[in-house]
Length: 415
Image (cartoon, rainbow, N blue to C red; front, side):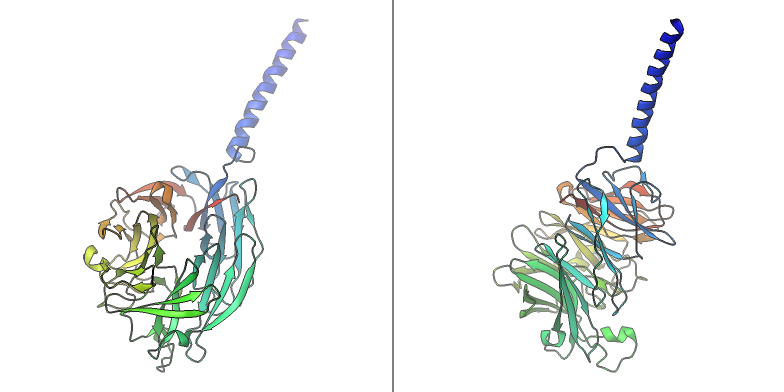
């Protein structure tokens, strides 16, 4: 009798301990633990592969591709988030087609791969127009001056295109349009572009294709959603090219805000004597306002901006070039400074506590509800996700990512 009672107690105790350990293991693995309906997605690379990592919180701790929440992807693409719907990876191969892959969250908030997209070109510029991504490649060839567009629906995965437009029809200065920015506004598509000679001056080197006599001009084409050109608006002499390029890729520098005003950010690319600045478009007639100009080079003490990130309430975080009076498309010129600006009040503040000896910076995630922008930054050792608080203009470290490089971060929700 005593033996049987002892055995029963031992069995019960063993079952209890087993259940407890199993519960702890499941929680650590993340397989059976409850998941939120949204996930941060961190794009990482090592010497051989690229991975997507997911996390519910990026404020602290660490994450590794060797963990459970890791998905291997093809190549080393540049990443673009279609709102919180899907993440798209575009592999750039100059004029040749590049593999396009996309990922979204399933009903259990797990990351899943979707159908690959076959495009006839690589992608240089991209932007959201309503709930579609408009992507584009400009030829840079005066003998065939065209831009090739596709429309991608991130919800249905439908693709429309190619839609080909003549870029010599967009300008009347003897050069050709090279598109650098795409933004939707009401029923219009606003397309920022620079003009280049595209080799028409006899240049044979790649850099010569971008030669221009009009780097102190700001051009925007106003299209309908079928990409039919309605008009071109132009500003001369105050700043330069819309948006900031890195090699052949660009993100939008055309930023609508809550009250309907539209701000245009220019890095003044390849124009040493032209300041970086912000112009404003009147929403009623879609023309540049002559009485508004925010001179960023002057406000910063001689520095030029690279790209802009809208946080809300007229506040932007700017990524700036590291050295004064530098703005080029080459990766050799680093972009390791940050600032916070308010375009309505025209205030400028350098971000404090930026880490020193930065080796690389990935594409950021904007968290409007928290007034912050998160940048992946590597300074030696593992990359870390740094958060810029717009209210304080300070940067603080968050989660460490145990990978060689973090190229981008975003956030997806279960649809």
